[in-house]
Image (cartoon, rainbow, N blue to C red; front, side, top):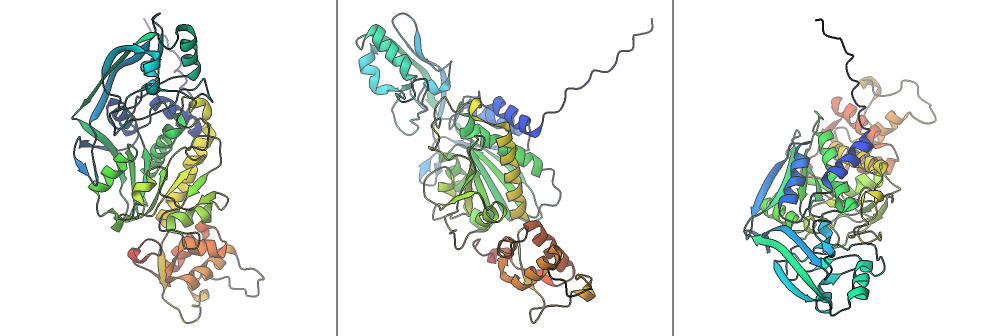
Length: 453
């Protein structure tokens, strides 16, 4: 019998970049992340399916600068059960219900005696707060304030409830992910995103998605000058562990950014590097102010995310921070309301474009010495200048060449020249390439870069 010829099924349409980013946030959001454990590893596994990721395990108790790597925490179940069998907090329903790193316990006690270990948000009675106790012996539960109020109204403070935390703290390891995209040189651009918060979409599943997709795009590039390094690590202790393992990183890192909170609908906010100021920004700072002059820029302070660690005095890396709405400045921060509804696929895609633009600019940034410094060199005989003089305003490409020649004194990088001239960075970069090919420029050593030394 001749088989029936069936038409090939129509493949599903490819997701737009915005939708693909949002889908990746949806994929990793359910993982029960902490600073250690299976949820963190599952997240890194998902990232590693898209980019070449190396995962380092930092064993519990290992000294990392002034800290020690934490014990590994795992949870089997945790809940509070009322006399009628109702659970008012249940880790299975949401990992936010349990204070992170709560130790094991099983007991019956009154609601009144339990109150010091219960965390709610009276101002937002429908939201569950997010709380941690990484470095203490404390424990507790987080729940909706209206749920607690209803339990108290129905049973009273003297009602006995069953408390179960089936958790384990053991000698294990903390996972840190790295993706290294090799460039022509060992000079590096560092991008970092914290990977420890469970069930919070903006903080920081959004930035994990943006960083992953940025690494995926840059891995396809074949003309990178710098090596690009992405770090996916638990907040604070993960960055500290990475720094402890890379004590000489300051010699190779030219700049970079900590990414956080990139999926909400707020405008971008940039926090400067420690060594940069509004008057003397680093290359990372200048890339933002040159390419995105409308972005709100704030001076460095020793608070926030892992920029605190990278900018600590001993390392003093030129690492800024890019967010949309910063931590603590949106009401949903560190609550169950930081969910998918808070995110915009278009905001994620815009953030990805911004990160790629900044990284590309840092990668293409350089300083030069002009080889002819006494008077302008004759560009016409090198085919670099419009043969008819007297034009009121030189074309952009020619203006860019004149600016590059004048400011290529070994101190001004291309971002500085673009900012000072008001010309697009791409035009300045192209002018430098043409002048370099004509032997009118030579590279200045990377180590002498202003703001990068």
